[in-house]
Length: 336
Image (cartoon, rainbow, N blue to C red; front, side):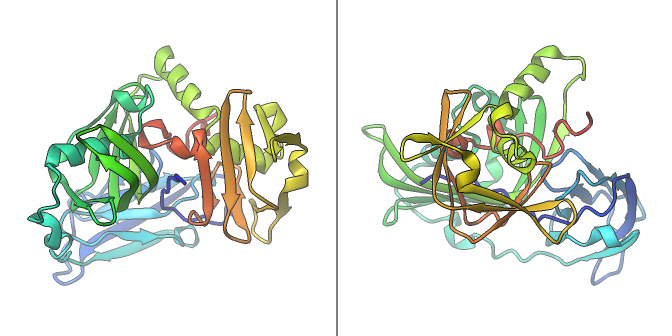
Protein backbone atom coordinates (compact mmCIF):
# COMPACT_ATOMS: atom_id res chain seq x y z
CA UNK A 1 0.00 0.00 0.00
CA UNK A 2 1.38 3.35 -1.00
CA UNK A 3 0.61 6.53 0.82
CA UNK A 4 1.92 10.08 0.90
CA UNK A 5 2.14 11.96 4.15
CA UNK A 6 2.70 15.66 4.70
CA UNK A 7 2.67 16.93 8.28
CA UNK A 8 0.28 19.68 9.36
CA UNK A 9 -2.46 20.18 11.94
CA UNK A 10 -5.95 21.51 11.43
CA UNK A 11 -6.87 24.65 13.28
CA UNK A 12 -10.21 26.23 14.05
CA UNK A 13 -10.93 29.09 11.61
CA UNK A 14 -12.42 31.77 13.82
CA UNK A 15 -12.02 34.78 11.52
CA UNK A 16 -12.99 35.42 7.94
CA UNK A 17 -10.70 38.40 7.43
CA UNK A 18 -6.96 38.87 7.30
CA UNK A 19 -4.93 39.02 10.49
CA UNK A 20 -1.37 40.12 11.02
CA UNK A 21 0.87 38.30 13.46
CA UNK A 22 4.08 39.95 14.66
CA UNK A 23 6.85 38.45 16.70
CA UNK A 24 10.51 38.11 17.52
CA UNK A 25 12.93 35.18 17.24
CA UNK A 26 15.84 34.95 19.66
CA UNK A 27 18.55 32.53 20.77
CA UNK A 28 17.31 30.85 23.95
CA UNK A 29 20.71 30.95 25.66
CA UNK A 30 22.27 34.24 24.53
CA UNK A 31 18.92 36.09 24.21
CA UNK A 32 20.30 37.66 21.03
CA UNK A 33 17.95 38.24 18.08
CA UNK A 34 18.27 35.89 15.10
CA UNK A 35 18.31 37.65 11.73
CA UNK A 36 17.04 35.91 8.54
CA UNK A 37 15.23 33.14 10.43
CA UNK A 38 12.48 31.63 8.23
CA UNK A 39 8.87 32.13 9.35
CA UNK A 40 6.16 30.50 7.21
CA UNK A 41 2.88 28.65 7.24
CA UNK A 42 3.48 25.00 6.45
CA UNK A 43 2.64 23.85 2.91
CA UNK A 44 1.74 27.36 1.71
CA UNK A 45 3.25 30.27 -0.20
CA UNK A 46 2.94 32.56 2.84
CA UNK A 47 6.23 33.28 4.54
CA UNK A 48 8.80 35.86 5.56
CA UNK A 49 12.16 36.23 7.34
CA UNK A 50 13.23 38.08 10.47
CA UNK A 51 15.01 41.43 10.28
CA UNK A 52 18.21 42.52 12.04
CA UNK A 53 16.27 42.75 15.30
CA UNK A 54 14.88 39.24 14.92
CA UNK A 55 11.42 40.67 14.29
CA UNK A 56 8.84 39.63 11.70
CA UNK A 57 5.31 40.38 10.54
CA UNK A 58 3.15 37.90 8.64
CA UNK A 59 -0.44 38.21 7.42
CA UNK A 60 -2.92 35.33 7.06
CA UNK A 61 -6.65 34.60 6.91
CA UNK A 62 -8.98 31.69 7.60
CA UNK A 63 -7.70 29.88 4.51
CA UNK A 64 -4.48 29.19 6.41
CA UNK A 65 -4.98 26.02 8.42
CA UNK A 66 -1.42 24.80 8.96
CA UNK A 67 1.27 25.22 11.58
CA UNK A 68 3.43 28.31 11.74
CA UNK A 69 7.02 27.12 11.25
CA UNK A 70 10.07 28.94 12.57
CA UNK A 71 13.44 27.60 11.46
CA UNK A 72 17.04 28.73 11.38
CA UNK A 73 20.14 26.80 10.37
CA UNK A 74 21.81 25.22 13.39
CA UNK A 75 18.70 25.47 15.59
CA UNK A 76 15.79 23.19 16.39
CA UNK A 77 12.71 24.01 14.37
CA UNK A 78 9.58 25.24 16.19
CA UNK A 79 5.99 24.59 15.07
CA UNK A 80 3.18 26.70 16.53
CA UNK A 81 -0.50 25.77 16.17
CA UNK A 82 -2.24 28.26 18.50
CA UNK A 83 -1.15 31.48 16.80
CA UNK A 84 -4.75 32.50 16.05
CA UNK A 85 -5.24 33.47 19.68
CA UNK A 86 -2.23 35.81 19.62
CA UNK A 87 -1.20 39.10 18.05
CA UNK A 88 2.45 38.92 19.14
CA UNK A 89 4.72 35.97 19.93
CA UNK A 90 8.32 35.59 21.04
CA UNK A 91 10.07 32.42 19.92
CA UNK A 92 13.18 31.09 21.62
CA UNK A 93 15.20 28.75 19.42
CA UNK A 94 17.53 26.14 20.89
CA UNK A 95 20.76 25.07 19.23
CA UNK A 96 20.38 21.76 17.42
CA UNK A 97 22.39 18.72 18.39
CA UNK A 98 24.66 17.17 15.78
CA UNK A 99 23.78 13.56 16.49
CA UNK A 100 21.22 13.25 13.69
CA UNK A 101 22.14 10.44 11.29
CA UNK A 102 25.76 10.24 12.40
CA UNK A 103 25.37 6.48 12.63
CA UNK A 104 24.60 6.31 8.89
CA UNK A 105 27.07 8.79 7.43
CA UNK A 106 29.85 6.26 6.83
CA UNK A 107 27.70 3.15 6.80
CA UNK A 108 28.35 0.64 3.99
CA UNK A 109 24.88 -0.40 2.88
CA UNK A 110 25.82 -2.14 -0.41
CA UNK A 111 24.28 0.52 -2.67
CA UNK A 112 26.17 3.35 -4.26
CA UNK A 113 25.09 6.92 -3.58
CA UNK A 114 23.91 7.26 -7.18
CA UNK A 115 21.71 4.19 -6.79
CA UNK A 116 20.18 5.57 -3.62
CA UNK A 117 19.67 8.97 -5.24
CA UNK A 118 17.83 7.30 -8.12
CA UNK A 119 15.45 5.60 -5.70
CA UNK A 120 14.98 8.76 -3.64
CA UNK A 121 14.21 10.97 -6.65
CA UNK A 122 11.57 8.52 -7.88
CA UNK A 123 9.77 8.08 -4.57
CA UNK A 124 10.12 11.68 -3.36
CA UNK A 125 9.43 13.58 -6.57
CA UNK A 126 7.32 11.02 -8.45
CA UNK A 127 7.32 9.92 -12.08
CA UNK A 128 4.65 12.11 -13.69
CA UNK A 129 5.41 14.71 -16.38
CA UNK A 130 5.36 17.37 -13.66
CA UNK A 131 7.61 15.35 -11.39
CA UNK A 132 10.03 14.86 -14.27
CA UNK A 133 10.35 18.63 -14.55
CA UNK A 134 11.60 18.81 -10.94
CA UNK A 135 15.22 19.20 -9.95
CA UNK A 136 16.65 18.90 -6.46
CA UNK A 137 19.00 21.86 -6.08
CA UNK A 138 20.99 20.64 -3.07
CA UNK A 139 21.28 16.85 -3.34
CA UNK A 140 24.66 17.04 -1.63
CA UNK A 141 22.85 17.69 1.66
CA UNK A 142 20.88 14.44 1.52
CA UNK A 143 21.87 11.67 3.92
CA UNK A 144 20.75 8.34 2.42
CA UNK A 145 20.85 4.89 3.95
CA UNK A 146 19.56 1.58 2.58
CA UNK A 147 18.78 -1.22 5.03
CA UNK A 148 19.25 -4.35 2.95
CA UNK A 149 17.75 -6.68 5.52
CA UNK A 150 14.45 -4.78 5.60
CA UNK A 151 14.71 -3.54 1.99
CA UNK A 152 14.04 0.03 3.13
CA UNK A 153 15.56 3.33 2.01
CA UNK A 154 15.86 6.11 4.62
CA UNK A 155 16.60 9.76 3.89
CA UNK A 156 17.21 12.87 5.98
CA UNK A 157 18.91 16.22 5.76
CA UNK A 158 20.09 18.81 8.25
CA UNK A 159 18.83 21.59 5.96
CA UNK A 160 15.63 21.84 3.91
CA UNK A 161 15.73 20.10 0.54
CA UNK A 162 15.21 22.64 -2.25
CA UNK A 163 13.21 21.48 -5.26
CA UNK A 164 12.49 23.54 -8.37
CA UNK A 165 9.36 22.43 -10.24
CA UNK A 166 9.82 23.94 -13.70
CA UNK A 167 6.40 22.92 -15.05
CA UNK A 168 4.46 24.31 -12.08
CA UNK A 169 6.90 27.18 -11.39
CA UNK A 170 7.31 26.61 -7.67
CA UNK A 171 10.49 26.36 -5.66
CA UNK A 172 9.76 24.16 -2.66
CA UNK A 173 11.79 23.99 0.51
CA UNK A 174 10.96 20.68 2.16
CA UNK A 175 12.34 20.02 5.65
CA UNK A 176 12.39 16.24 6.02
CA UNK A 177 11.16 14.86 9.33
CA UNK A 178 10.94 11.27 8.11
CA UNK A 179 11.39 9.49 4.79
CA UNK A 180 11.06 5.73 4.34
CA UNK A 181 10.59 3.74 1.13
CA UNK A 182 10.00 0.03 1.68
CA UNK A 183 10.39 -2.47 -1.16
CA UNK A 184 9.13 -6.01 -1.74
CA UNK A 185 11.81 -6.48 -4.37
CA UNK A 186 14.86 -4.38 -5.22
CA UNK A 187 17.43 -5.49 -7.78
CA UNK A 188 19.55 -2.87 -9.55
CA UNK A 189 21.18 -5.47 -11.79
CA UNK A 190 17.82 -6.47 -13.28
CA UNK A 191 16.37 -2.96 -12.82
CA UNK A 192 13.60 -4.49 -10.73
CA UNK A 193 12.02 -2.16 -8.17
CA UNK A 194 8.76 -3.28 -6.58
CA UNK A 195 7.60 -0.71 -4.01
CA UNK A 196 5.72 -1.79 -0.92
CA UNK A 197 5.08 1.62 0.68
CA UNK A 198 6.53 5.10 0.91
CA UNK A 199 6.06 7.64 3.65
CA UNK A 200 7.50 11.13 3.74
CA UNK A 201 6.75 13.62 6.47
CA UNK A 202 8.01 17.17 6.75
CA UNK A 203 7.23 20.85 6.59
CA UNK A 204 7.28 22.76 3.31
CA UNK A 205 7.26 26.28 1.94
CA UNK A 206 6.31 27.08 -1.67
CA UNK A 207 7.88 30.06 -3.40
CA UNK A 208 5.80 31.12 -6.40
CA UNK A 209 8.08 31.74 -9.40
CA UNK A 210 5.37 32.26 -12.00
CA UNK A 211 4.22 35.28 -13.89
CA UNK A 212 0.51 35.43 -13.05
CA UNK A 213 -0.27 35.90 -16.75
CA UNK A 214 1.61 32.76 -17.81
CA UNK A 215 -1.19 30.69 -19.32
CA UNK A 216 0.83 27.48 -19.64
CA UNK A 217 1.80 27.45 -15.96
CA UNK A 218 -1.77 28.18 -14.89
CA UNK A 219 -3.02 25.31 -17.07
CA UNK A 220 -0.41 22.96 -15.61
CA UNK A 221 -1.37 23.89 -12.07
CA UNK A 222 -5.05 23.35 -12.79
CA UNK A 223 -4.28 19.96 -14.36
CA UNK A 224 -2.44 18.92 -11.19
CA UNK A 225 -5.21 20.25 -8.95
CA UNK A 226 -8.12 18.54 -10.67
CA UNK A 227 -8.35 14.97 -9.40
CA UNK A 228 -5.79 15.52 -6.63
CA UNK A 229 -6.20 14.67 -2.94
CA UNK A 230 -6.64 18.38 -2.28
CA UNK A 231 -9.46 18.61 -4.86
CA UNK A 232 -11.11 15.42 -3.59
CA UNK A 233 -11.15 16.56 0.06
CA UNK A 234 -12.59 19.95 -0.94
CA UNK A 235 -15.34 18.13 -2.90
CA UNK A 236 -16.07 15.91 0.11
CA UNK A 237 -16.40 18.97 2.33
CA UNK A 238 -18.91 20.49 -0.09
CA UNK A 239 -20.65 17.09 -0.40
CA UNK A 240 -20.51 17.63 -4.15
CA UNK A 241 -18.57 14.72 -5.63
CA UNK A 242 -20.51 14.25 -8.87
CA UNK A 243 -20.23 17.85 -10.05
CA UNK A 244 -16.50 17.67 -9.35
CA UNK A 245 -16.09 14.56 -11.51
CA UNK A 246 -15.98 11.80 -8.87
CA UNK A 247 -17.76 8.44 -8.79
CA UNK A 248 -17.65 6.01 -5.87
CA UNK A 249 -17.52 2.22 -6.28
CA UNK A 250 -17.72 -0.66 -3.86
CA UNK A 251 -17.16 -4.28 -4.81
CA UNK A 252 -16.73 -3.16 -8.44
CA UNK A 253 -20.18 -1.59 -8.55
CA UNK A 254 -20.98 2.11 -8.64
CA UNK A 255 -22.77 3.11 -5.47
CA UNK A 256 -24.39 6.15 -3.95
CA UNK A 257 -21.42 7.87 -2.35
CA UNK A 258 -23.24 8.94 0.78
CA UNK A 259 -24.28 5.36 1.57
CA UNK A 260 -20.59 4.71 2.30
CA UNK A 261 -19.25 8.17 3.18
CA UNK A 262 -20.65 10.24 6.03
CA UNK A 263 -19.87 13.95 6.34
CA UNK A 264 -20.98 15.38 9.68
CA UNK A 265 -20.80 18.81 11.25
CA UNK A 266 -18.34 19.02 14.12
CA UNK A 267 -18.18 21.20 17.21
CA UNK A 268 -15.44 23.25 15.53
CA UNK A 269 -16.37 26.15 13.28
CA UNK A 270 -15.52 25.43 9.64
CA UNK A 271 -14.50 21.82 10.33
CA UNK A 272 -16.43 18.69 9.36
CA UNK A 273 -16.01 15.03 10.27
CA UNK A 274 -15.43 12.37 7.64
CA UNK A 275 -16.51 8.78 8.38
CA UNK A 276 -16.04 5.91 5.96
CA UNK A 277 -18.05 2.69 6.34
CA UNK A 278 -15.58 0.60 4.34
CA UNK A 279 -12.81 0.87 1.80
CA UNK A 280 -14.07 2.48 -1.43
CA UNK A 281 -12.84 2.93 -4.98
CA UNK A 282 -12.73 6.46 -6.38
CA UNK A 283 -12.99 7.17 -10.10
CA UNK A 284 -12.25 10.66 -11.40
CA UNK A 285 -13.49 11.64 -14.88
CA UNK A 286 -13.90 7.92 -15.66
CA UNK A 287 -10.13 7.50 -16.08
CA UNK A 288 -8.20 7.95 -12.83
CA UNK A 289 -8.81 5.18 -10.31
CA UNK A 290 -7.87 5.24 -6.62
CA UNK A 291 -8.95 3.69 -3.35
CA UNK A 292 -9.44 5.29 0.05
CA UNK A 293 -9.36 3.49 3.37
CA UNK A 294 -9.51 4.87 6.90
CA UNK A 295 -7.81 3.15 9.80
CA UNK A 296 -9.08 5.71 12.27
CA UNK A 297 -12.62 6.31 13.53
CA UNK A 298 -12.94 9.79 12.08
CA UNK A 299 -11.07 12.37 10.08
CA UNK A 300 -11.46 16.14 10.29
CA UNK A 301 -11.66 18.01 6.97
CA UNK A 302 -12.08 21.63 5.91
CA UNK A 303 -13.09 23.56 2.81
CA UNK A 304 -9.47 24.12 1.78
CA UNK A 305 -8.61 20.44 1.31
CA UNK A 306 -6.83 19.92 4.63
CA UNK A 307 -7.42 16.76 6.66
CA UNK A 308 -6.24 15.37 9.97
CA UNK A 309 -4.99 13.09 11.31
CA UNK A 310 -2.76 12.28 8.38
CA UNK A 311 -1.75 8.88 9.71
CA UNK A 312 -4.67 6.53 9.32
CA UNK A 313 -5.84 7.87 5.94
CA UNK A 314 -4.64 5.68 3.08
CA UNK A 315 -4.92 6.31 -0.65
CA UNK A 316 -3.77 3.90 -3.35
CA UNK A 317 -3.82 4.10 -7.12
CA UNK A 318 -3.68 7.54 -8.75
CA UNK A 319 -4.12 9.47 -5.49
CA UNK A 320 -1.60 7.28 -3.68
CA UNK A 321 0.98 7.67 -6.43
CA UNK A 322 1.12 11.47 -6.17
CA UNK A 323 4.42 12.76 -4.85
CA UNK A 324 5.99 16.16 -4.22
CA UNK A 325 6.19 16.89 -7.96
CA UNK A 326 2.39 16.72 -8.16
CA UNK A 327 1.58 18.90 -5.17
CA UNK A 328 0.34 22.45 -4.86
CA UNK A 329 0.41 24.73 -1.80
CA UNK A 330 -2.69 24.41 0.38
CA UNK A 331 -3.64 28.03 -0.39
CA UNK A 332 -3.77 27.30 -4.14
CA UNK A 333 -6.81 28.84 -5.82
CA UNK A 334 -8.04 30.54 -2.67
CA UNK A 335 -7.22 34.00 -3.97
CA UNK A 336 -10.30 33.56 -6.16
